[in-house]
Image (tube, rainbow, N blue to C red; front, side, top):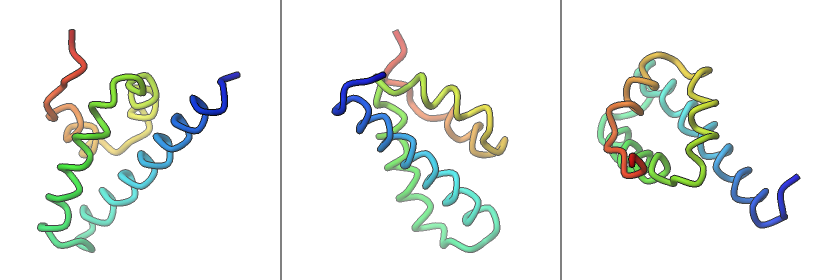
Length: 81
């Protein structure tokens, strides 16, 4: 069990990942303009580099579409040691 502040942060991170997964699907189906998708990729880079939540991303990535995983893996990793 996590303290409330930690649990809230983890829950928010999960929610952000659900949103990005949905937005990737919209983009892949041609339902999102490229300009919007490019802006969302910039924001995804910010979430990717929230190092304290990397474990969540690594677990969730196993359920993402291959294209989204490739995109995430191509982002600059500020958490690498």
